Amino acid sequence: MSYSKTRWQVLVPLLGLVIGGNALAREPAVQNLKEKAILDFRSCAKPQYPHDEMRARHQGTVTLLFQVGGDGKVGDAKVGKSSGFPALDEAARSALASCRFQPAIGPDGQPVASWAPVQYVWSLE
Image (tube, rainbow, N blue to C red; front, side):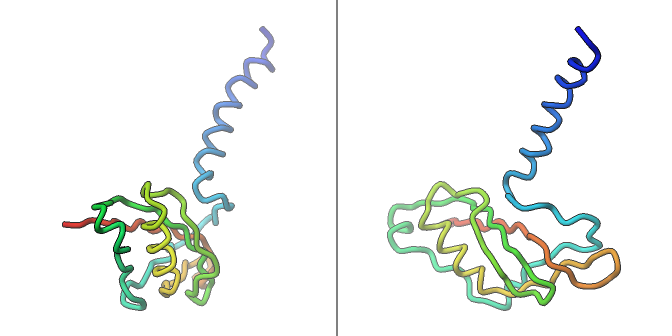
């Protein structure tokens, strides 16, 4: 077995880890942030539990991804990992997309655009 073939066999799994690690965001990671964007829950209404989901006693955690501009406004919002219940996912996504964020801070100390993950837990207790 040649050195290059062995090296390639090692690099393929490593490449898979890199791609897999970013698959959730589906966007390039912003490097070298001094501070990540932070959701300001005081800036928007709490997501309302969809009536049918509450009646069915559905619960779960959804991971949402928000594209936050340097001004703290959400430019895009999507589901990164579903709670298992699309109605819960959409209720959280649409409500939290109207929130403001404290924007991420770049290495120069200035606000920068970034993707911010947010987990929202739907619980009946």
